[in-house]
Image (cartoon, rainbow, N blue to C red; front, side, top):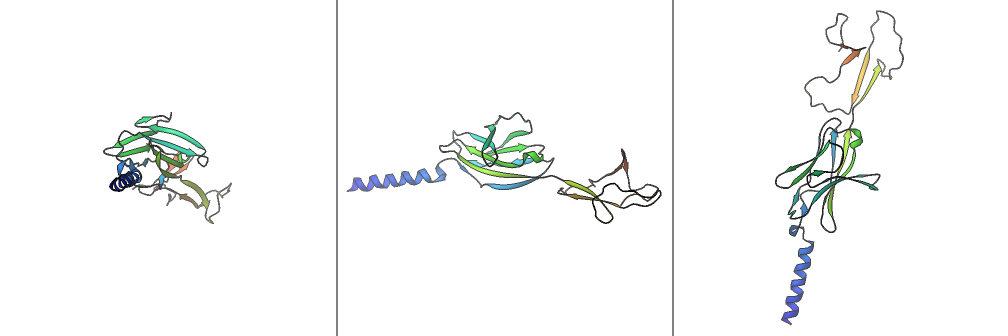
Length: 190
């Protein structure tokens, strides 16, 4: 009877340890969404505890997961695009950096650990790409407009999806190749 209790107890413990993530590689965190400004840097974190002898890879899933592109294995980059690099941060962050990002980088990225079956988390990357539209005084999109000589015109520049952390104006008005500034003799721009 004691053998039966010990055998079943040891089997139960083995079964629990097999499913308990503390005994093997596991992710610190979970899948997430991330938004980055076009032209900026995307830093996709992948924190893994107890990695042991396993390998970390980054892949990109496209076409609803049908197409998979291998980006990195360990700290080695496998894509021919130099904008992708692994920036390992001690002790456990296998960070994928994409710099500079553009709208074509938008999509699902997956950090994988070479366990059996593989463990993974997703990062859904969204890229904010600025849009610029010039409108007239009525807010109508500007097409061909004709004005009388020496008249005053009012044009508005509507900028959307741009990060406003910068401390200077990122909008410039040009006439031909000449930058218009705020101190022209005809009243300038505002």
